[in-house]
Amino acid sequence: MSNPAPARATFAMTLHVRDHCLCLHTQRAARALARHFDDALRPVGITGGQFSLLISLNRPEPPTIGSVADLLAMDRTTLTAAVKVLEGRGLLTTTPDARDRRAKRLTLTPAGLAVLERAVPVWEASHGALGIEGTDLCEALDGLRDAALAQNRKSSASSADIRTSSSRTAAAP
Image (cartoon, one colour):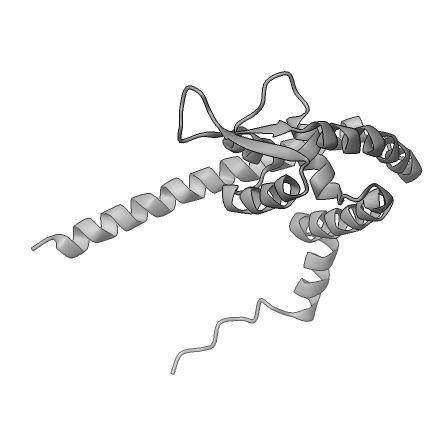
């Protein structure tokens, strides 16, 4: 009979993860910030996530769903669901791209722009109420996001290599 592996999931490890886990601390901060902005923007009739989506459309040329998904770090399915809600409220429109009919472009409507006009001062006040200068923090979070995305790409490529070599090995005579 072999010796059991030493336990790794000890209470000491739980405390270590609680105190040092980037994912846990980022998720906790994100939830608290989302509640803060949701509460602040409620009188305008939108959530913090809807504000982020609407403000991302406020540009000279209507963006594609793909470019907005990239900007907001959302998968297209989740973004499409959020777009449908705002489109149903008349705050944005979806139209096929003139050059690539498979792509969809998102455009703020006058009603969507009016909501943004009311929401921006609320957003500014909400930021000020936190008492934190956001530029350095945003740059640090962007760096963290980029590092995680790079690691995810590396892991995906490695997993694909493993699957490919496994299928070749299984297919070998």
